[in-house]
Length: 324
Ligand code: SF4
Ligand code: SF4
Image (cartoon, rainbow, N blue to C red; front, top):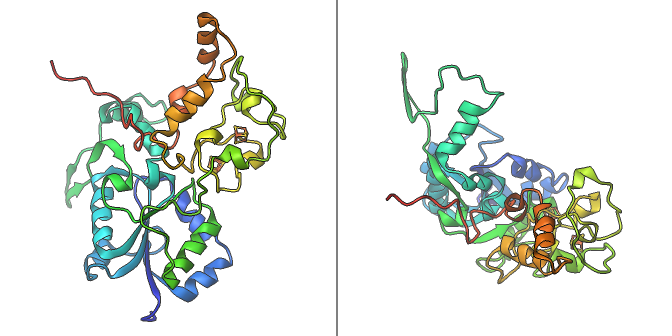
């Protein structure tokens, strides 16, 4: 390990692993990365231990890329540990940035999630109706599991974050550029959302737009959308009006609407509320009954509007009933 090379860590919290794959997707750029950086901790790829990190002096790591939300006590513990050991902490990908897909669990309590996953799911045989336990005694000793928290949090809701690399997953080109920027000391200002535009996706989207009027909403997989016309004008919900541009229209170019993974625009407090207000202002009716019928044709509105950002939103989670 060269003394002058960048010391980098990569870790996943509550995530699917796609962000780690995105790091590999930088292809030949990996040679540039290897030239400037040593990976000191990446448990997904190599056999590192937490004790390897615990033994490092504080701020020993130059950059940590933390992907995934804070779902359990292990995620939280490692986020705190890596924060202490790192000069720069990057929230890597939509789950660390906004809570991501795991954050949709915040529409339910932990008990409801357990009920669905371990007791009601037809694909999970569980005749003894066992739920995960923090500790289980076996002949060899006591096995321990992390505590699943009642709500999913973003990385910044658990530890201070220096900047954000958005996307589900982040654009591989942006990853390589961030590592190179870190190597030259040209990192963006604290709090920046890197590689994303300050403009809305709609402003950069190449699809033709004429007039937006909603008479009904359709699910993408039930229609054959015109690949050149705006999705919204075809009655297919697209979150582009409430999402930062910068991904290179990855979904839109594949004839799929934007789901909002690059997150809210600067100064927007709530991505879901912003798209809801954009939609509401283009409903093509004055008749309350018809307005209800049009709105009822939106499948799973909460899941659409908060696909990636529920934990970071004003809602954050399902409202808990107060004890009487
Ligand atoms: S709503 Fe979607 S398809 Fe329409 S202009 Fe915006 S980003 Fe493009
Ligand atoms: S089009 Fe939207 S959902 Fe798709 S990658 Fe870009 S920001 Fe994410």
